[in-house]
Amino acid sequence: MYAKMLVPLDGSALAECVLPHAKAIAKGCTVGEIVLLRVVERPPTMGAEGIDFVALQSADKDAAGAYLARIESQLSAEGFKVSSQVLAGRAGEAISEFANNN
Image (cartoon, rainbow, N blue to C red; front, top):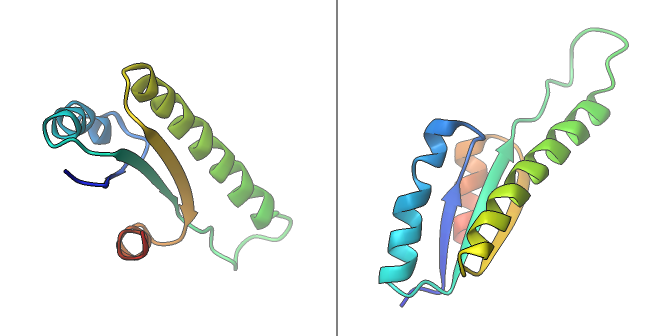
């Protein structure tokens, strides 16, 4: 039995191809919780004048949260315990750090 399974997603249909496999592993290995993770890249802090980078990142996080909520709802309806997390940063680093800390 595993306590948690981390499933990083980037919002693409290709990334979602992992979901049937994650569900099969979760069932077969009695995984306690599936954790969905989406990393939003930070916008560059230097750029064109007049762009509100804080608002841009906030909108990206909101969209990522809505995306994960949809998948979380689908998995929950199938009987899985699911949670989701949206992080900001570089995907590889953020995923590794999250996995190590959680």
